[in-house]
Length: 408
Image (cartoon, rainbow, N blue to C red; front, side, top):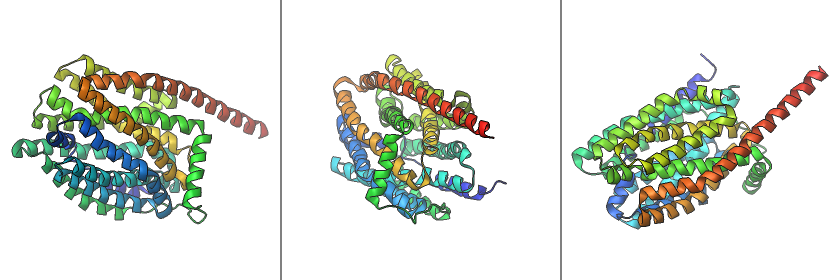
């Protein structure tokens, strides 16, 4: 048994017990049932991301100042309360208020989970295992989500009440959040930590000065927006455009997650084969292909591409965050991750409202195609820049190795 395995297993347990997301297939259909307009739904969801814009960086500073475990516990509690409130909502401003609380929870979770794992592994001298361990945690989460989605489909089919899935999921999540206290806080030297303002400034300067970090953050924005917009409208697309029943939606969501979990188990090997340069190319081509098929194939056969989208959703975080984390020091890890999420959410709010408006005017499928077309030139530019940066870093490492060998 490797040193610290018990600490990693406790994180897997925490992730499992906070991932029984009964709400996943039906939260957007619940809002659509009461609001009846794709643009209003987009505006409601924009409040979620607007809240993250306002509070993600403070949450990151909180995680660096008070610890990863505190951030995780607070985040999971707020997350669960937000889901519960969403399930009890029926009007526009009720959905907005619940989304604000829900988003606050996500802010603290994002500021806690990845930094917790990476700093724990640094303490154990196992940092190279970060991507594999995060992929395993994602598989655990996907498996629990898959079971929950299948159960949710049965619940809605039997009761005819979409909101039950949110209410029950929230109550389970509240109980699960207390497993955060089983986690052992990683050792991070906070004795020399600067003031919140100075700490943020240092993190921002780190991003600006590092071309690699900047490219990764911008690429995450483009990729993440594509993944999220598809996820946001997926259940409406399946119900309205493909005329699938609630039971089938729950079952299909469950199979999406199970297939993705199986593929994710091999993701580390895929990343090793493709390397830093081509892993990002694969991720974007997979997302773009899914959008194009949804537009071109107007039948349930298009569902097949959603399996690929779930694979991307599962592996892009561990892979890209792994590339980010190895270029960031522990004292500023939460803050820099928070800045990355901040920039992502700032752009997402604008894109989401625009897509919602276009979807109301031209139809959902046409709006998805438009987003794919507009994002492609940006993604291609970033991928070219990333390829050059990886080559530059490799050249610098080779030169350093040669100099050391010459000195010896």
